[in-house]
Figure 1: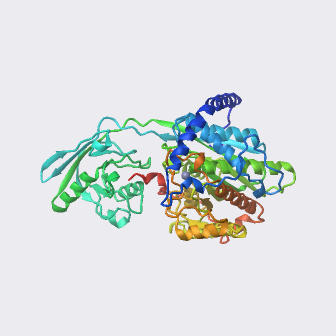
Figure 2 (figure 1 turned 135 degrees about the vertical axis):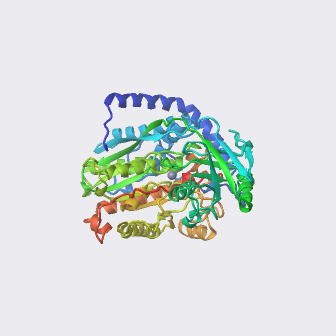
Figure 3 (figure 1 turned 90 degrees about the vertical axis):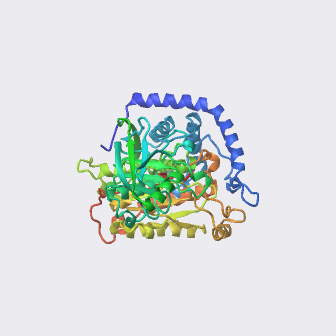
Length: 572
Ligand SMILES: [Zn+2]
């Protein structure tokens, strides 16, 4: 079901709840930010500059008003003050709920309620709805068992919740298995290539973490090539990558899996090179319970629902921090776009688009694009409601991380879609890239191409054959000197950022706060997003422009596998 109605009583309770939270959090807010500021100042580059100096203030931030100035186009309605007001609210929520807005926490629930209530109260003319979905919990039951048998000598490995003292640990979304013996096979290289998995059928496959693929992608290959069990081990390249690490596979994983320390992994690799090695495994998980989370969407009432433009971004953070850049920045951007478009529509001075615009805030991106995948799967069901059909979606614009402190003005490169992307979606995606590029050039702004491999919520739309595009200001990529020079030339002295520093030093960390936003770059990115929406909205024949060679009915393949950064544990 695409549309869920909220009762008035529920709205009232939420409003009361939010009001109480606002009062409680005022005191906490100042203290917490002070600590984080101090911490941020400690991130220094070789010249002794701090990364926080790359954050350029766009003047004093007012908190009194969110109404845009009178303007008759969407780009001119974008003001950094409105964006920062939303980010301050998201920060306030996180401050009050354990410094995270991850799914399964109160911080996430309050984020969703904030989005819903803000739209309901400030964007009259939009139809707002929630889309519930359930997420499975994973809890290990008892202690998993790992025993090796090398030349008939058995060795039992140590399990401890203290990872530094443990030989191995469990893997989230491992399947259960009663004590069973398997022959061990070593997966060559990093296990990122199909060829690496040719001989794993019926065996326990041991693979080192790292390489160009994620742990979840390795488990996908292990599943495809019929391994019976999967053992990861740490790569040992640094002193912090010796112990086992708790990682997460996708919910649909069917294999029992464990994660071994570097030492145990290496011991088994060495033994397997000389003789046959077997391992015994036992993993038990609690009965699967689940909890409900929600996507939120808001539709323009005007516009042809059979030709819908989707503008989306994720609403959840990782457990490690408040996620103000990732993805408070996208969340706030879409809130401002939605609200300002609704106001322009109501002003009477703005030509309404021929197309419906659906703004969406996806849940659970950080555990593998779960909210967006759910939406796509629902929308392609033969039972999808008539106002929620995948075939009506012309394009998905995605905004995930727009305010990185050492930013780039990154454009998804439509030319670099994965080879298995449906060809119908390529032409339009390249055109979207060009429109962004032309806008940045026209404004004499620098820009960079960025990854378009499906690593955020546009992934399932693109894989289904829906044109996609978006912007990205950078995560753990490093700024090059060429980039800095180019940005300095366009933006002025001192605005090029820090060479050799990553674009968001607080990516997936506790310090991803409102101090982790470059307001200059952020505002430009949201203006570009506004331009794109208006450009598409004012096109006469968007369908033909996006799909010049026609458009088969989009469909997400059954074997679709999310490509998500979450699975690439940044500590290993
Ligand atoms: Zn993100």
